[in-house]
Length: 111
Length: 114
Image (cartoon, rainbow over all chains, first blue to last red; front, side, top):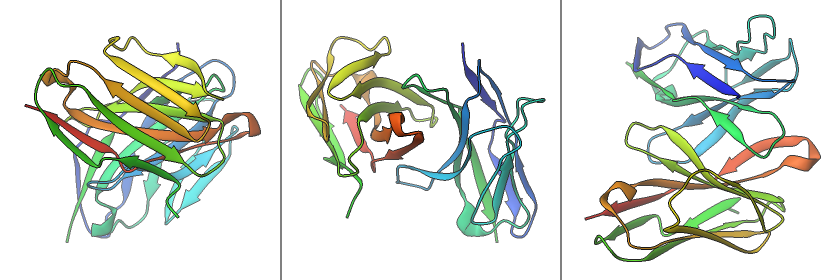
């Protein structure tokens, strides 16, 4: 079946550091891939998405590229801020009314 | 305007009680979901409804009963609450058939069973 694997956290970085959160997936066909972010006390919100191979999703300085050859969708940001502290979820959707979420990666950015 | 809203935001109750959580979306979406998030932030899908019909039921105890009176609402009723039901419950919606498959989440309901 479909699955998403993302790196375990927590990830602790200093402000302005480079961020990578790894995400790999297993799926049949051509799923859409997402990164969602959950700030403390809130629901998940879409950060970025990509719907086909080699697409790059980007938002708020975050980027992720849909790599079919490596079945990956790693999240990157060149310079993190304290306000980026949150839990990040990688997810896929393959059109069967069911989204598959990773286990979440907590990011803590220190001033 | 809030796209996906849930009530209540917090729910504290005793074991054995019955409680309901309400969810409404004003996005015109056809599909709605309930998720359970545990203390480690793991997100587990419970139910999915499309056009008021149950599509997904992920091995959830039958103490949990979703009800969708119309496309904009998906409520969750829980009977005989147990300690292990304590979690944050999220409602979400999406428009799967349009190809815009982004899910929109509500703010969550934190359920504490004492």
